[in-house]
Image (cartoon, rainbow over all chains, first blue to last red; front, side, top):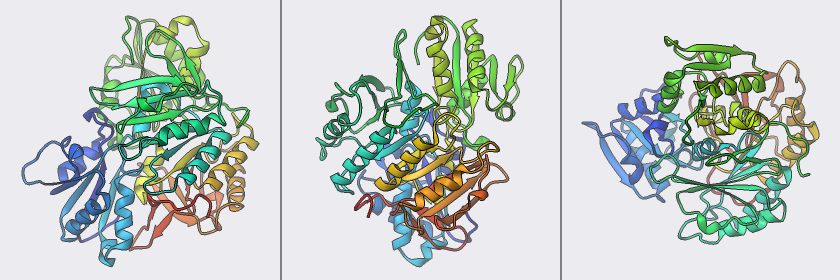
Length: 257
Length: 257
């Protein structure tokens, strides 16, 4: 991002699971690092190289991990923090920025590079057609860091205005009811025929994609590895042999017809 | 996407400009194709291979290009349509789906694979920090295919509900006033201090990134190669030597405070 004589921190997007989603830039950033930080299962995807140290941490310790990586880089090292998907979408890049803003002034002088990756919604959309082919929004359903009424307000606004809606973090052990409640809320605004896509573990061997409709969408079909896309009134399903194609046309006539 | 005995069509995302953004999967799909279809400047990015035919078309001929590629694939060939960024985000995948839905029934039996890519908003966000670190929406500002009042309604909804807003297609020779009008509309809802990012030609040698604020954002700073991100009330700017960091924290307290 900028010249620096001190340490270097790369925040690297691994994409969703499979190595086929890695960009050339991500491969180079991983190879150049002296130290790798990340959630254990993400670190396990990165080929081991001699002379590289590895620092695994728990999924929920994002700020602690970001601060540890920044401290390490501030010693003058080349450090990489790995992130699933794209680091900028509900992932590690914001946690690193939070730590830079609240940490020692010297961290602002570090050379910080964010390496983008294929975020889950792009991979799920690609597997089923083009549901994100027109205006869409991406919303985290986690109410750990924001009140549920804010999420409800955003669901109402997005559905009424005709956006396709992508749910990141739809469910977890500590958040079992939120997805069902979100579907119920959307049924106030959208027809029961609006397509709903459950993409689970996309890019991994256990990948599944399910297409259903809002009237019968069952939140229990989702787990922590699932991304959910709810179509707008304009989203269409093309029946064909095997898996259907789901897409949102590029032309829109009205927002909430 | 599915087994087939007939032709094969891949819709391949090239990412934003530079080869460092290409995924391994995209490289393989391009190498395996017998025929390549696409907008000329995108085709020019793909290394020439013996035995591969190339079919360049104009930027605005998306449906014609999609239909030509489908007809070619229906003859039993391996065909690739190239797309800038990610084919599923305001790009070729929806055009291909539209042609499949309205074309000959036999096209539904083709083996269609969408290969995701780094879409422009991920590349621009990575260059400046993590502006998409929390809830956001992506909106095409082109009113070629939807009425302007639908765009206004979506701007109102997204800004009020606290989404960061990404503009694709902010301006073109035929659409000179839309971006200024969109900024004016957003000033009704957002504080003048909301950060605005202009990312131009990201991933190319002539790349520029400018950070300003909504009160002084000047639409004439954008052209056809520009992506614009307007922060929410929560988006923050970290001053530091050189280019600042812009990010949206993972925690939100209220939607429209």
